Image 1 (cartoon, rainbow, N blue to C red):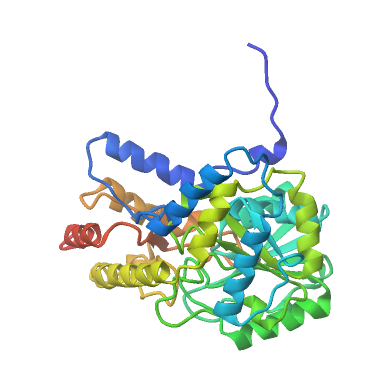
Image 2 (tube, helix red, strand yellow):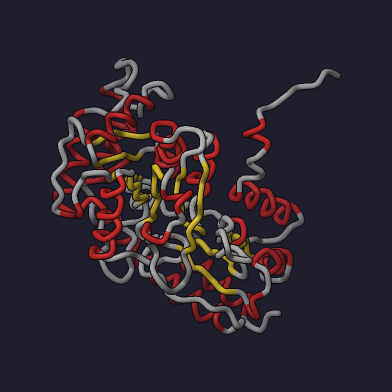
Length: 393
């Protein structure tokens, strides 16, 4: 058989954490186990009825409408601007400061292609969302990780960067609220970081896909500090249980939005009309996110004490639907996740090591000795999980 060569950048990626978790869970289920899946952050609630109705109506209305706009319809972009005005008091020009995306993952992955040349530096949180790093690798940039832990700041301090990093810095990623730790930065902290970004002429990219799932208090947006040198990445996946719809948006500095649009037109053909119509309905609905917040809070109240009884360090998150759990006696997260999945509990959780990149000068990644639980199983399934953990191991 002949050989087939693949690109070196593909080989360098390794396994994608969430795909690997799906594989391990499927193997355990094939053995007959009833696995309760806390691994991948995919909401199990149905998409709201109003969203479904809007999609169906749009399907009939636009069944011969052709390709959608690369940047999103005027109605979609206006809905985004209206939501920012209502939620944050931020004014956006829908013509120049908003663009639609096919979910936030593709936007995050491709963003470096518009702003990063080979050898340029992208700063990203560890633990964090793998596409921050993977997208940088594909753009042939250098991704430098900063640690986010269960205590201390969730934001980087650019004044502390070594000269070789600071001189080539082009993009800074933050997650607001930070996942998986479930902690959020306040507006004052965001203002300090944005001032540093503007002083250095680099771009701040704020991934705010979980902003509406706050459990303690509403989460600030980076756009509240002003639009200059700031892009926010948003998604309808979590606030409206629309992970499979693949719709989100980028908003902020008009210069950066224009550059991203130029890139995007060479990658895809826009978000389908009916999906944009569904997203417009979701953005107008504040009741579904409120119901989701209540549901995730109830699940956290079941799982946090159950994990604490095992000797785990777990706290109710400020925002998001993840529990960032310190393992008993600091054993590796990979080992604790294996025991939970292969043992009697049959719980699928994600090892913290799979979500964390090495941080220069630190012997272990910030994910070491942790696991992540996505609170997506129903309340009843969480109660079953807690019962399985009672008296185990």
